[in-house]
Every structure is written in C-alpha cells, then in structure tokens.
Length: 125
Image 1 (spheres, rainbow, N blue to C red):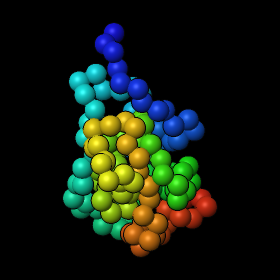
Image 2 (cartoon, rainbow, N blue to C red):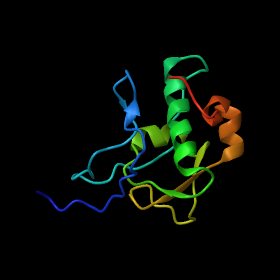
Image 3 (tube, rainbow, N blue to C red):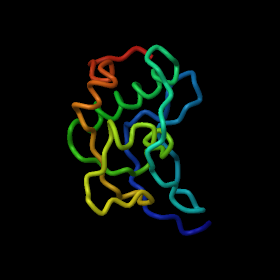
C-alpha cells in the first residue's frame, strides 16, 4: 500500500447525512494527493435538500468543534468547499488548501445568518 499522508480522523463526527448517500468524512487519505479546499458556488436555497445537507454538515461542525479552530483532517473536501470562505474560514495566513493539517474555524456570525437551524441543540434531518 502507498505511503498515505497523515490525516486526523475526527472520532465521533457523523460520517454523512442519513438516507442521502452524502458523506461528511473520508475513510482514508487520498493516495493520488490531497483534494484541495476551495470556495465553491452554492446554489442551494433554503428549503431545498441541498440546503438541508449544508445545514446538517454545519450543525455537525458546530456541535463537534464549536468556535474553536479545528484541523481539516478527514472532513470531506467537497462539503467543506461549499461552506469555505463564508461559514468556514482559514485560521492561518499561509493556509494550505491541500493539507489535512490545515486549520479552519466557523465564522459564527456568517454561519448563524446563513444557517440558523445549524445552531439548534437538535436538528431534525
């Protein structure tokens, strides 16, 4: 097996959105290289299934990490990219979008404005 880069596995973090096939985490580092995180346009409008998935992912991030910085680790790059640059931001000036060790944090003001339901104690999915 190839030498895979070190990747923190966030124990206890939901692996995905139940009943959708959408993943929130990856099982192992990508042997072809780390998928970069980049700001992706978000077309999901409130009330759509896509919006619910983004809200559920943010809910999991908030309830797992809170306002503290967290390592990208095994969090899915596509899911992060839909929130990146808005609700989830880089902590470091020299942010490496292709590092599993990159530090991120939730911009709470932006996140609460975009996805208020993500901050409820319990979110029905």
